[in-house]
Amino acid sequence: MFDFSVITDKNIEEAIQSLEESLKEEKFGVLWEFDIKEKLQEKGLEFDKEFKVLEVCNPHEAQRVLNENELAGYFLPCKIVVYVDHGKTKIGMPKPTALISLLNDEKMSQFAKDIEDRLISCIKGCI
Image (tube, rainbow, N blue to C red; front, side, top):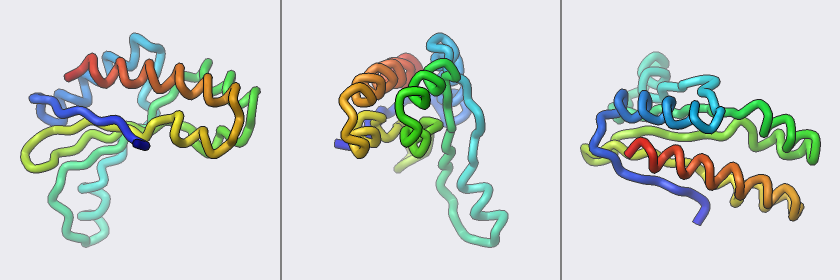
């Protein structure tokens, strides 16, 4: 499976706030929060689902990964989505291990596994 996701009882704003706090503990920051619903409606398209994409980064890890293999830059920053599906707030992400496997680089796979485990821990920490 290429992704990891959970369901939380929190609303979307509470989930994002909790996630940001959890990410800080692992020295990840939210670089950008993209509100897909807002953007599509701004363009005149009908879309009523709450759906936000957070781009997250730990600068030290990004430097470490890019120094090892610049092609990893295609997968940076990491993305975490927070959205409402059938009345439930979900938090999920594509697994870094699934993405980095495209590089066929064992050392990069180890880096990705470490990042993945830490991000999953952050997501679980805000349920």
